[in-house]
Amino acid sequence: MKGLIKTLKQIWAVEELRKRILYTLLLILVYRIGSFIILPGINQADLLSNTSNDGILGLINMFSGGAFNQASIMALGIMPYISASIVMQLLGMAVPTFQKLQREGESGRKKINQYTRVLTIAICLFQSPAYLQAFVATKTAIPSFTEAPFLWIQWVSILTAGTMFVTWLGERITDRGIGNGISLIITIGIIAGLPGAFFEEIGTKISDGGLVIILVELVVFLFVILLTILLVQGTRRIPVHTAKRVIGRGSKQAMAGGQRSYIPLKINQAGVMPIIFAQALMFVPALIAPNGPFSDIKGFWYNAVFFLMIVIFTYFYTAIMMNPVQMADELKRNGSFIPGVKPGKKTSGFIDGLISRLVFPGSIFLGIIAIMPAFAMNAGIQTGFAYFFGGTSLLIMVGVVLDTLQQIESHLLNRHYDGLIKGGRIKGRSSSSAVTMSQAL
Image 1 (cartoon, helix red, strand yellow):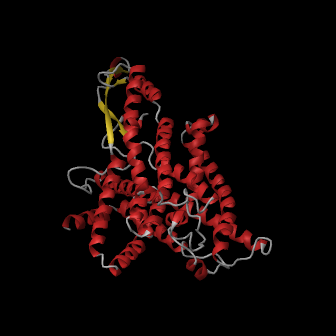
Image 2 (cartoon, one colour):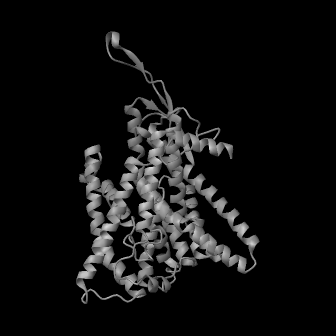
Image 3 (spheres, one colour):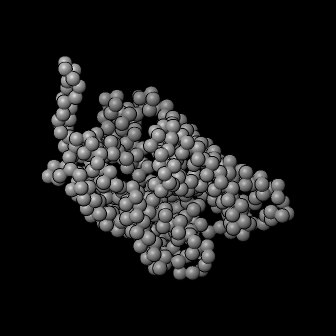
């Protein structure tokens, strides 16, 4: 307890860090307040009374922090922006024009961000009427588009503006706050539903006389979190040596190189992207056949196909993201080599083989984490609380929390304060404990 109080005092003592944290908390508060502002002309009481947290719609509602079920002005949340970002990322892998923009540095990044925002607006203009027709209109009485076209235009405009405002909040947090703003907003939306889901689970179990079961569930929950942390941080380090060389001429000659570093290859190189892709495809049969075998998120066929798709997408996404030939060329260009491996084809083959051996256990592990909520539901845990036992939500929460804590720790260490933990440093998804070759690749 004393250590925690000391750490909080150190955080508060760093003026820049204190301002960043307060600024982040203020924008998060604005986001949460906006989540409770309802669209004009919508009867929220009827909407909530006819809404269930089960199924895929419950999962979407969790990511929006409850705004989806409430027909809030931020009902679409940040997901349209995430979808646009994924599309732009895929275009950057396949289309030469976008590949060129990615290599143009800061100017290219600004152009890609502008394209992403425009694509986000287009997605919102498509999703907003679909949301109103397929969800809101089935839960409470609202006029059709032909009956009140101006009201529908108002709703679509508000929902689109709400998403763009949330995106703006996320970008401001990234620039002037602490952590990645977009990821932090998603995490806050997920965590917002945790207390209510937990107390609902407690109420159900206590009424059935199952207090011991609650303790068992908490132990299992903590164990799953531990496994997720291991998946996020698990890394295989490839040692790299840089040969010494002389740079400059005459009296300005100097020795460079001779350093030892490593290439960190994560067990899960693909992150949550395979789950997002697989989940997006699993939405299709659920919309086509709501009562079919692939629509039951706790059924065997849904989870079997979901697991298999995650494994396939993990291999696919890793193959796109990791280029052993390019990595070997960069090593050779920088005068670096892997001990015991010849430069060139031998190095690329060595890296490729190592990546292949890491992808298999990583994909299996990721698939298991993704379908853990189904096991929790079938074990009798309430659906709302079961969502936190794995899947995209838990992976995002763990990754974002680690990244944010790593940034806070960096601020402390830069000012010669102690870190947040003893005997080591916190590693986020993108951090490393040393200057690694991955920063140059």
